Image (cartoon, rainbow, N blue to C red; front, side, top):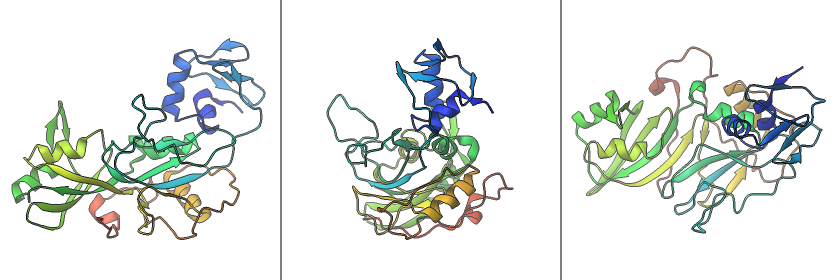
Length: 284
């Protein structure tokens, strides 16, 4: 059976489907000795080359997912012209494919970051149509009044777009430091900071504590990662409606679950406040 070329490349762990589409459009991919076209379909016997290097003819490697606790000052990029530390510097080496970051965090944002060698899973987890939300712990220099909270829930204009939190709750605080937990459906670059700034509040700490059903494990120190176990991996695929590639056991999983109860996406959705159980997180 034939499959879309970008899906095949993503399944080989070369990157997300969107990234593979860009590679194809720029002429970097060749199928059977001719430059591939966007939307092309391939079969098992077709020869595929990327940047002049032929891909192995065997199928994709087994799926792996890493859960990382990013520290401040680390960038989510493979290369940095300024020589800063990247999240990829200390990851385990893959025999085939490469690690793909699921959703980026900016330089000073800390907390939960997912990485996988499966481009199809990465696409499911990051694409807006899947309907996965993200939760952040946010420290600001002032306590917001009811009017500001209502405004952030109903929406404000940012760069011509109406943006809002699907949930915002006061956590605790005193003096100039007050903590909130907020939920976003996409989490565009600097969106949390800009939303608070629209109400005159400056964000001084920002930490992602949940990505859909995956929580930041309370036992995971900053700057470290742990591999997701088999049961969680199977459940995660079931939630997003992805097919799980056969997986060999790994020795970097503690066996403790990193998931919370979460609806199967594609089922009827109720409001984010009532349908997701949100655990308490360390603020550090």
